[in-house]
Image (cartoon, rainbow, N blue to C red; front, side, top):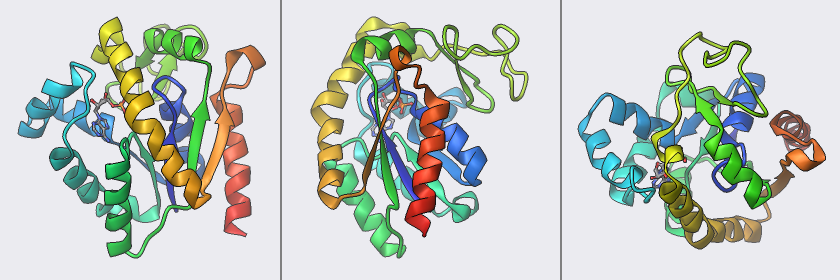
Length: 222
Ligand code: AMP
């Protein structure tokens, strides 16, 4: 199974992907997580990518695309993959099509998460992540059982560097509007997009959206 999860930053892609991976036994391929791991480990890829990420800019395709291809070929990807954070431009979407064609695969569903803008800015500021297992929490709407500690693995939660600066948050949202939103159009034309609303105002959070997606996927499989 191959899924792509889309939506502006802070809509809940990480949380929904985490639930889908647990329920469906597939692998979450998050380009942002791979970059952050490399930054932490100070690899060459990490040092190069950090120049862009710390500014809220996109990492160039020459770095990102081969990294995704390598992850798609990994053993963990065999059971299925949910792509989170890739593709982010129409060019990347076309390169993904090419990659999949070469591997005799195709996208089963593109999940598009939709949330009001004022909610997502607040969610980014209040987001906390586990640097070990990548679980995502929120100090307002998805609190860990013990304050500051990951429910899944007991590691101390941190705040993403690019969630700390208002400038980086605004930059990322602007890139989403100008470069990533057209990717959705590209997939809508292929008829594979499933829209899912996530909003506190209607008490429709990530768990409900994930449950609905799993139901939809059962229909796709039939
Ligand atoms: P994310 O965790 O998906 O919000 O990604 C964090 C940062 O990593 C982004 O703001 C970009 O700087 C970089 N990044 C992640 N995915 C991509 C991608 N597909 N293309 C370029 N840069 C990316």
